[in-house]
Length: 426
Image (tube, rainbow, N blue to C red; front, side, top):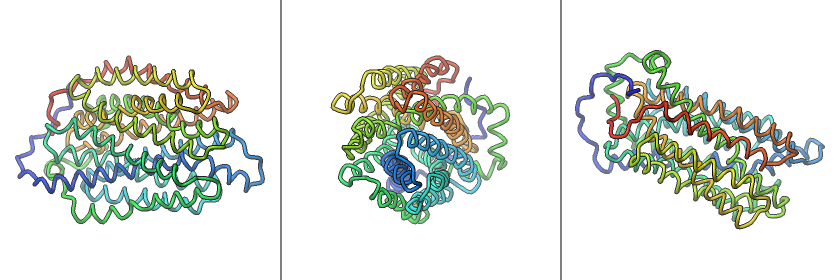
């Protein structure tokens, strides 16, 4: 199906200077980097935090308790991100990309920092949900802003850089975990790092220019973006985007995000840096994968690239979860390739999703699709926790089941439109 009919073409606007383009990109990349740091923070602190809370409640520490609450908190995070993506995406189409972006960054920064004061799993769950509201909005707003402001010839490269920047954040928090032992006594200090991005909001509001495409669309189109993406002819586009993002997010959040906890389990907690090294190696693979995924999509086409990413993710994850039972070099090598293959989608999505929604509803459409996918990923995270209980606390057996979701992508991608070589719809 071709992209939805577009609004009248935007009249040519004076191109931004190189410095202004750089300012837009820097703000978005920093926002995504800190977004990744916030997401990578929880797998590093989850096990010691939950163990401390379980012990404080007078119960014996167990992996089943950690696995159950990891699933619940991850699900709450994804639901919050889904809601935030919809709300902030809608806000971005109503009040502008820049203003909404600054609000989303402030939201996720403050509530992540407030986790320092959490004393029960329920409090930690609530704060992760609230922080996720901002994280969900930041992705779609940043993608829309950069893709609308920068020249179209740079889209494949920018899409890869967008995805990679979030994984730079994952790598940074992993490095902190390597050199700063995250234990039941120190995890609270680590979450305070998550409050630092609040300073970025001042830079965004003062120096980042608004998208001229959005200004024109807002002035000429009715401000009903949510209604439009849920009605014909965009309804089918929204469903397609939701299905693809659901596959990607279930695979990531239902299994791969649990690798640091699995590493901690394999070492019996005797090597506190193991989970940080796992996160760091996965992030290095993910940075590489994001850049490759976007470039492959630009060269080979969007649909063939998605098919190859699903196939490679399925092969690598099966090998990792079914072939490894000790922490060591083999585990880390496969973790790198799992990060590479499963994160390659995050370079592909910033390239593809803006191409199937017109400017007037772009932030709403891709935000709704991406974050509805997070709702399904929340179900996957809960299922991961349930499978762990079923398999006696085994991360490997549960992960092997959840990552079968990539098999669905091998078929469903052929029902989507190919957009290679097309300009962004206005």
